[in-house]
Amino acid sequence: MRAATLLLLAMACTRDPGAPKVIVTYDDVNEAGGAGDLPLPRLEERGGLSFEIVDDATGQRMPGKLTILGAKGTKDPRFTKNDIGREEEGAICAYDRIFSLAGVGVVPLPVGTYDVTVSRGIEWTIATQRITMTTAGVEVRARIKHVIDTPHWASGDFHVHAASSPDSRVPMRDRVYEFIADGVDMIVSTDHNVVADYAPVIADLHAEKLLSSVAGDEVSTGSWGHFGAFPLPHDMDNEGHGAIAVRAKTATEIFASIRASAPNAIIDVHHPRLEQATGYFLLGKFDDKRDTSTRKGFSYDFDAIEILNGYQDTNRRTIDRVMTDWFALLDRGHLVTATGNSDTHHLKYNLGGYPRNYVLVDHDEPGVVTGADIARGLRAHHSYFTTGPIVELRVGEAGIGDLAPAPGGRATATIAVRAAPWVSVSRVIVYVGGKEMKRWTVPDGDAVARFRQTFDVAAPHDTYVVVRVEGDHPLSPVVGGGKEVSVTPFALTNPIFLDANANGKYDPPIAHGAHASDEP
Image (tube, rainbow, N blue to C red; front, side, top):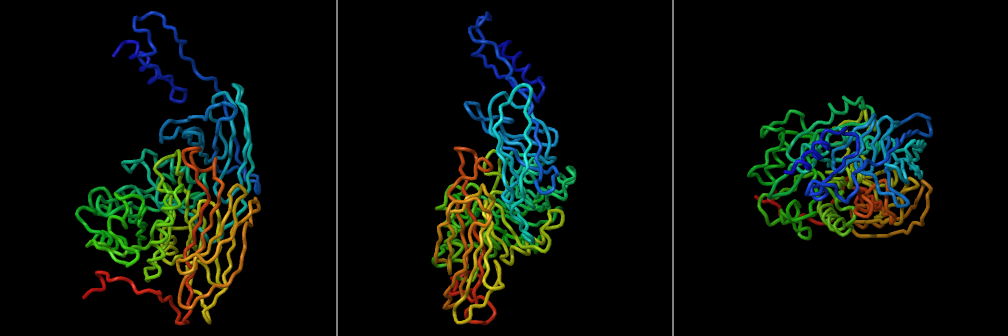
């Protein structure tokens, strides 16, 4: 290596890590050692972006996220070029975002013009301000409002990766900052074949009242797919590194192992049709039309399936396909819960908490809700998932996941949809027995109460009602990665089951297929 290159690399390595890096390659240096024609490198002029995030109702500072985009020819900032955040006082900076726990801080920002959007997740308003950064610095003071209350509904993302996974570099500490800044109540660790624990990280940040955590595992196999399992004991050590054993095991054996190690755990089939290499329904040769599998070792002993994976936010056809699988399972008495999770591996796009699940619990405060509470709610189908809209579905006194009477083969249902002003709601679709019954077009608007409708449902036999909500306008800049990843609002409820024959239970309308467990 040339001496000039060595010197410049050494300068880059010893510079203050908070300062901008100057990258100079050998091609930039005159090979003869004389003066070159190129100008010498210079540091960008910078100022301090001082920020304060305030709860409009209380006047108190609170956690939040700042998304910063260049305007009027200014480039988007690059606080980091990878998924390891840069820690500032009370905040983690990554790419073009700042995740703040304290709700106050200052970060260096190159001189230029920017649009700064302050947010706190899908239950809050946002505030956007255009600034012109100078070397003297700029102050951004934002007051945002909590416009959607969800008592007894705790939000959680049940598919989250950090540096314990070989395909993620995000430190667990950065994940905690991210989830708190985006207003998620619970984080579930699902690293590949590792049981990780966020609780010590949360405690170290004194953030126990802001975020609950659950230890889990993405049980990852090369031949059967990926499965989320949580809550798991923190001391699991089946293969020397705290994981469910998978080597040379079928899905039936893997699920049995989970049940033996953690009897109350939820088994969630992750991205069942995302791709051939990781989709359980593809690898397991599941035939939804016949409710059978032609591969020995396939098992129906799972509690949930991931209908929406964060990498599918832009691909509704894949969502429709997995919904078809789910409806086929429900029709035949496999009463599994629909989930939506981010599968986040990065800090740049498919951010944690988009989508997130809302689960009905006794106490929804982050410092109180537990993994057992969440598992109990999911097993009872008392949940829905969303990237933005908040959905309520009722049939009389019955809510999502409940059994409702349908005397005379009829029932009356009510849907209510709320959304923060920056979240669009364009369509509401009702499915009965897995088939679309009705859809409504919702006009654009920024009122929180976006849609409400009461309608009759015909139920000649036991069936179920599911509601889907879509929005056409992207959630950017709060969510997504600009032109790379455009996320639009989507929500899906779990069913309300209709008891048409008045025997106090849901009788599936179709007999399930010839499963191994049914054979003599």
